[in-house]
Image (tube, rainbow, N blue to C red; front, side, top):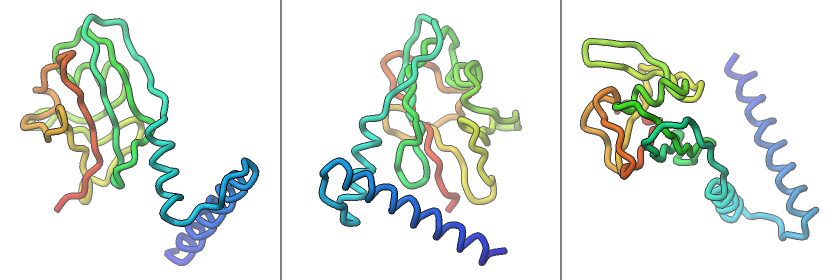
Amino acid sequence: MKRIFSVTLILVLVLTSALYLTACSKHGEKEPTSSNYIEGMLNDVSEMEYAELGKGKTKFKLEIVDTFGYKSNDIYFIHTDKKYLSDALLEFELIKGEEGQYGLYVDTVVGVTLDNKTEFWAFYVNGEKAQTGVDKIEVKSTDTYAIKREKIK
């Protein structure tokens, strides 16, 4: 089973690289090296579009970032009348989770469910890791929020 997965992964990587090289040569660009290939990916990320959700009075920015630090589509400007971040995100089905003894435990973000034994979703406010649970973070239009996939240490 591991061998099939490895072969499939290698094929996907080879096909992705071939498509990227073909696209570059069709547009008259020089072929990428590994360093400018990564740069190109990062530039594509920085030029991503964003989604506007809701019609509430308070507007805030939310970024969703995966394990490797690449944004995963995901910059949202959310308009809400909800008081807490969890309620605003649940309203638009951006997160899912279960209530536990410490509040809402988020296990799914934009449809991606993590293995709660090795990873978790961390919430950030203005670039700093949140000191409370998502259901205790008050929504403010002056704050920027982020959700990042992180490994359990």
